Length: 282
Length: 251
Image 1 (cartoon, chains in turn green, purple):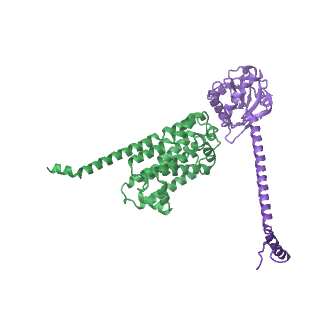
Image 2 (tube, chains in turn orange, green):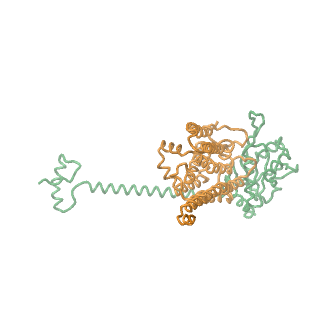
Image 3 (cartoon, chains in turn brown, orange):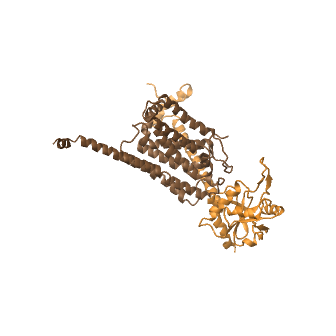
């Protein structure tokens, strides 16, 4: 039995494999959260919504890490590896952030004494740079072939993806207001630049390379006879297009909130316009 | 007034007295104080310089070694396993998937032959090699005159139909060859391959331990290189055009 999904030389089969490390990690995320939430049940607005969001985020983490997707991504298919990356950074991480109440985030950061560091790292330029640096490093052939070959390396890569996913979403949806950007246009620009532009570079390499870049997936036993080059091209397309619905969806939501805010501001200014009052009095 | 003591290592005994006495003379001459500091400093500098030279010399030697290694590497033409003395393509006749006799040499004249011994039930190496070759041969830069010859080591289960449908999963141009068990074993020996042996895992379905190399023969019928498992596509793509050129240079 293995602790975490890593490269295997056996041919792929749909027979179940247990990875207790993945279950343990998921439980370590969910159980403390549930205990904290049930202790303060009913004391906060939107309690149930947050609970569902966090559980969905944890579910995404579990699906991305465990058999079959975890094993396919660690050993057999580059496109499964890319789906994992998308799940960690674009689904699990934002849902976990949305599901974390402010008091819980404050308590955790106070306990581990990382509030100051989290404030520094959540600055848009820093968060975006770290995320993109991680993205390029963890998708380099050297990193993939080295880290995926061992359970610890594979675990480290998955955890890094999740942490960087949390980091990149902090300026947008952090539970702590001091982490969030205040300007709506700033949020839109940040989302586009941090998550929409740089991933297109490795995605382009993957899609248009003549040869498979990752030895791990090139020399793995074939899954349903999918060729290594086709697999890599699919990985590139997922990287390039897979994030579009989430990123642009988020941008649309931000724009709607911005327009709502503008509307409210206009109503407020209108109602306090002294000239209008005079006109209405007459 | 007490004269300065220049020789600082030993203040006691005759040496110190002598130094004190001659210190005046030296001072009067205007020369440097009589101490061993200068000498030791010089020696120190000298030894440092020597060390530097040694270090530089070692660096130069290492660089030369590296350069020579690199040039040795450059001498290696193929990325596959180069054979010191190229071997000739064995003269063999087996049966193809249409049930017709197939002569390895006569029926593939002017082609790069990639000969591989495997079996259709192989779970790992065979499908990887064949998929790699399919992908490489689809590349526009790959030469046209390349033929893949898949010789089964399991003629009992790999009937012509089974062999054909298996190879069609990869490329319908791949040629499947079979024969009697004795003929297949003789073919393996002729190529210098390890003779495949059946292995019986606990599930009861037997498999074969077989040679994982692809034996490559240029159009001049000579085998210059072999490709073990795993071989990356970049290596194939590098070597196949080189192998294909042998026809022109030799003929």
